[in-house]
Image (tube, rainbow, N blue to C red; front, side):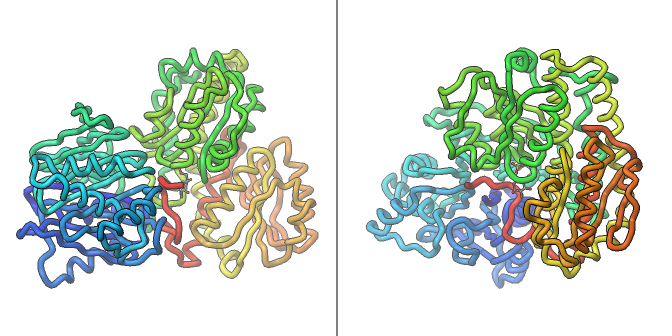
Amino acid sequence: MCGIVGGVAERNIVPILLEGLKRLEYRGYDSSGMAVLDGQQQIRRVRALGKIKNLSQKIQESTEEFAGNLGIAHTRWATHGIPAENNAHPHICNNRVAVVHNGIIENYQELKAQQLDKGYRFTSQTDTEVVAHQIHYELTLLGESEDALLKAVQNALRHFKGAYALGVVAVNDPHTLIAARKGSPLVIGIGIGEHFIASDVSALLPVTQNFIFMEEGDVAHITRETVRIFDATGQIVERAVKQSTLTAHAVELGDHRHYMHKEIFEQPQAVIDTLEGRITQEHVLVSAFGHQAEALFATIERVQIIACGTSYHSGLVAKYWFEDIIGLPCQVEVASEYRYRNPAVLDNTLFVTISQSGETADTLAALQQVKNSKKAKNIPTLTICNVPESSLTRESDLTFLTHAGPEIGVASTKAFTTQLVALALLLTAIGKTQKHLSSKRETIIVRGLQKLPGLLRNALQHEDKIIELAQLFADKNSALFLGRGTMYPIAMEGALKLKEISYIHAEAYPAGELKHGPLALIDDQIPVVMIAPNDDLLEKLKSNLQEVKARGGQMIVFEDELSNIESEGSMQVVKATTNVGRITAPITFNIPLQLLSYHVALIKGTDVDQPRNLAKSVTVE
Ligand code: G6P
């Protein structure tokens, strides 16, 4: 997965493309590059290893001015070929065609063999280079005909298997940018006398608020004055221009040192925004899930949740809620397993995908597989997603948008919290539609959710204490996170956060499993983090805590005001919150774990917002 940006304008496009790349850096940051058509209508390219700032510096330092009115740029997360300058995009064929690509061309080896036979030379190990060569080859067949570049791209696309978002420029058509989308996201930004393309809206917010969301199979012919879009069958089509409600400011860092920190502190507001218009004083509005929701919810007998990473953890929390609170069977699975294991799909299952980006390739493929399967009847699909107009929202029968706002830090924080809010609303909506939830219970849940922003604000106030505790991890290589019930998936999320951003190995266990293996690990070199709310399982958790203590383990315990565990010896206890309910507890206890990972990462000096080897939106397998 990678980020692409491009544009055609009267002004110099280079600063716009650089700013766009910076805003897309979360999608990949192994290397980056840019190609423009200069005053002599020649393609000029700059590429650099590492972050966008390296590219920016190289452009500034270039001896000849690097400028142009038409250009494409790319930030890369390596799939085929190591991170290296020669593998960075744009890829150029014979100085005539330049291409940026997000996705994977699965049959590139076969195409490469054919192109080698035709005399094309390869300078990279990427799958993308075949795209540049194929377009060049199609152009030579078409000669000087009208719309040659458009037709060459359309013809080339017929040869590609896999996924792509593409930006293409060529010297024979120096005022045209061609864009194509299949399986990877791409938007067209509409300016005044200028047009742009990008992998997402945020990249273009400094230059426009108006966007066309390209659909599967679309190819766009873009000049300064016009945008013509052709669908997968080659027919010219009209696509609506939509206005983004996001402001350029929404993705700026403000006073925070990192996006992750900013996003952790935005959580109370993100919850308020996600609840707005979805609840009344006492009730959840079922129609918040779409006008067909009530009819669909009435027919379902079970829920299947599919997601990846942090989003998967929110699904795991919801499983406890669904089965415990409304007695509805709920299965949760990571998308990359589900899509390849020929699962038994039962009739009347609500198929729920959860995703911050709405573009995660495995989650999307699992959804498509279920939609195409004829194995079962009545499988309505719902996505809980943070990005409007994303692939998952288009492919699902029902959409619930979390209103977390743009999440830039690679480690997900506020998206997770709002996913949990969405799932709490979902369980209430289904429960009341199926009459498995009394009106009184519904009101208790709604009141709890209304209190949540305040609970999160209180939990955030423990940051100073957590900064102190983070020191315990400074010289450690491993950590263990323990919880029971819904705190088990929260422990998993805590361990994932620590791994992702501090590179400390961390594992989560249901505390009751300690005696079946992990107890053997305990010594003073492995800090143990326990989550101990005052719930039905507290007494059992206290026994687990003794088991660790007896073996000399160093412990951090997060409790609520009624848990009554006291700090002593190597055990440090933080009263992270007041008394919390069954739904608000996991959401609230996640906050200190986010802060802990963040501050450990600061001590370790890692790249918090863009940890090594990871990317925010995984649009490839
Ligand atoms: C990547 C990100 C995670 C995210 C996961 C799923 O691994 O680094 O933060 O949880 O993808 O992404 P999604 O957009 O589907 O929630």
